[in-house]
Picture 1 (cartoon, rainbow, N blue to C red):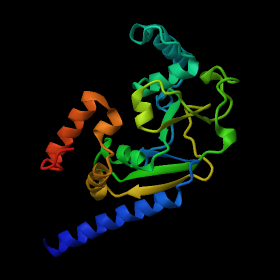
Picture 2 (picture 1 turned 60 degrees about the vertical axis):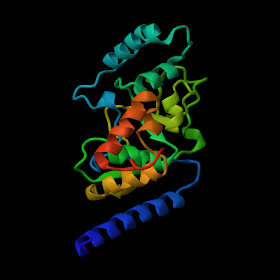
Picture 3 (picture 1 turned 90 degrees about the vertical axis):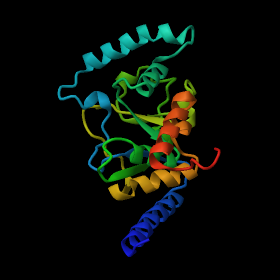
Length: 233
């Protein structure tokens, strides 16, 4: 191994150790985390990223989803919060943002999501009890008056496996800056190293996605990266 390779390896290990130290310093259960593959990304939900956001369009999307989703959900009873969480989970634009109580899961999304050639970041914020949305009192997600956090019911396996929680934004067309927000940046040339370390901690495509899709995605990554093919996991 050349001196440059040794220096690069040491730098990667140092950044990883700094990240583990950072997570330990914020191990309080009230902290939640979100991974961004680009440090320039704002905390703005997908429904509001369109140049001309309109509440009427958002309402129509959720109503169509509620009507058509029954084809796939059978007789499962879902309230409005369940519906918007499920829609977000399956990729429909909503006023929700995904967070997790597990910083390693956030690092997974930060380092594996596109674009892959940018410095990534893990954002953290501390959630107070008064920020938790009382879904029994606030029945309609599109009518909230302030941004808060939704503790979703275990309506899908992936939400559970990702230790998922959602922020729900009362102004989805405006970026949100939580009070006390902190972050840990992951340089672009360290992202693949993070993926390997996360894999050794059991944070991989199979853990995150679940099912055969997750297994095959994990094996595809292992093949491409040349990681763990000599062992049975």
